[in-house]
Image 1 (cartoon, rainbow, N blue to C red):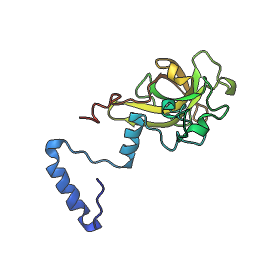
Image 2 (cartoon, rainbow, N blue to C red):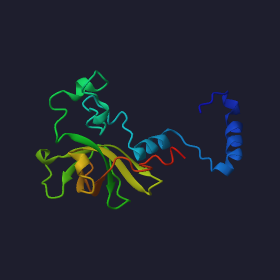
Image 3 (cartoon, rainbow, N blue to C red):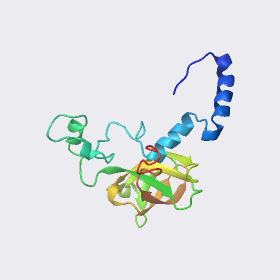
Length: 182
């Protein structure tokens, strides 16, 4: 719910809501928490929707109809944006949960030399997940949906950071929607 009220009443209202919500384990949150929950659920947003991403890249290709006009049809048919080795949205978790994944870092196979020709993808969004007790990230990786379980080097040349990470589903929390339907 979204409530609008004069500023002078905000503290009283929040205090009252917290008091009556104790039995339900009520928890306040703000936009930062909302961003973390978005990443935990693998929801694409601004960083993942850059004008070159298609439903195929977001693992939602089945939602685009080839039989009739639908949102995404035109973009999904553009040459270069629908190749089998295209970038796919993936989850990325560091092997060491304390290693911070940084947006903008690039993904390389373990055996590859770090150079632009061997770049396999990049991180779009990252955060610390209190639910998982680890840093996590969303990103795009070539042939990513077939790489779950693979280890990659996450390289940030500007900050001179290199992290070992594992590729996984972009949905880190509640993949079956059990909490959603509880």
